[in-house]
Length: 339
Image (cartoon, rainbow, N blue to C red; front, side, top):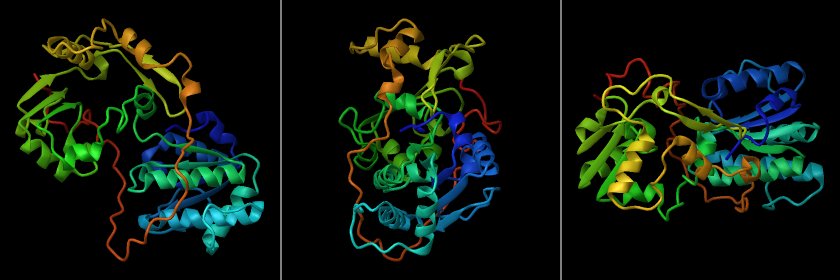
């Protein structure tokens, strides 16, 4: 769930494999560091579905449809196994030319990394992509990391805000509609993988409560909208993709009757008599949510074994990046605040 290294260490890499990353658009500052590494002689390889221009020389590239990413990683693993003289996770796979070039590049370095980008995190077979990437990195003597998809992905992981943490699967909450939903700073038409199905579930629910800082389409399906402050009017903590804990304070007073989201949740929890809602400050929330040693909790290890899925057959596959600010409610085209 994290980068697997310090951001500053990217500059010193001599080998890098990027999997499913619109790097320049998803992580422009990290892209600058990758280009700096390239200028120092690092060999950068890419596995992607879009042959966009990274503005740097590439040692090798494999441009295939998303459904073929797992198979391509299996070919790279087979080529790495042949170079290292070890057994591949799946026998009988013949690597293609692109896979051989990527494997040769990774194995020829002394400080390499395999990084999964946003498109890999959003992939239907994301777990298998990480499993293969982990095996390849270990066999090639490199590190494996996940470039954070959102600003606080690692923080959410540390706090236990992950699918299945409470016995609920995110997909099931949509495809097996619930009677009630609570949306916290969430705009389903922009923030979910299947907006149409999510909106159908919301419109069919008995109750939908939305916490929002700005006027949005929740007006069409929410029974109540509670105004909460944007990040500028509250305190909080982000944990970056390298595991750096970064806390901040509000810089202006909340507008009107808006209140920080954590305060609204606390009051609702108290009214419902629920345990765990007795915090009186953001610092108390942070102390309870984050472990004393964050670094000790971060690991990209997975118990999932690399495997090949059944061929999907010929079908149309959509390839699209998420535009900058697409899921950002603070973008200038928003219609206004909730008052």
